[in-house]
Amino acid sequence: TYEWYEPDPDYRPVLPEGAVRGDPSRQVYCTALHIPRYFYVDEERECVECGESFAFTGKEQQFWYEQLGFNLNSVAIRCPGCRALRRRASRYGRQIGMARKASAERPDDPTPYLELAEGLVRQFQNGSTGNLDEAIWAARQARKLWPGTPEPDFWEGLSHWMSDRRPEGRKCLSRFRSHPALVRRRYRGMSDEARGLLESED
Image: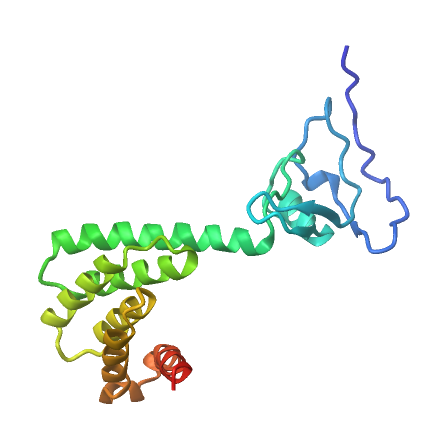
């Protein structure tokens, strides 16, 4: 037989050093299988992706179980860095899928090609899985449709650079850096990234 546990809403134990107080009324758990968390302490865990040790902090546990509504069975199995990589990979994957669809539906619109090139480049930077040849193709398509914008040179340049075609990459990035539109704030991050690559081999 099961013994059902009913938490005492007024129970407030003395907190261990460094612990974060929990609120059982905001936690999701089975009273037959779990005891509520009256407090959280940091837990040392090993990442299933990279094998590095990391802390599943009390603050993070409180957020998981009391803000996000995760069951008390849920635990962090990846370090913060690997979790961030997975989130970015998912975001870039969605961007690439939407851009491919949009470019097929609107072949005369340069914007989907730019978004496709960006997604593929960032996906490659995030985990070396992006198709850089497709990114170059998309950047060139955007340039044909919108020859006055500097962005195609940036994405094509990065694609060549990361494919170890440095001369082609340098040519595109230098052309991007000399474009008069770079005075606009929206291009500041791209300009800094391009300058960093170009100066790394000077």
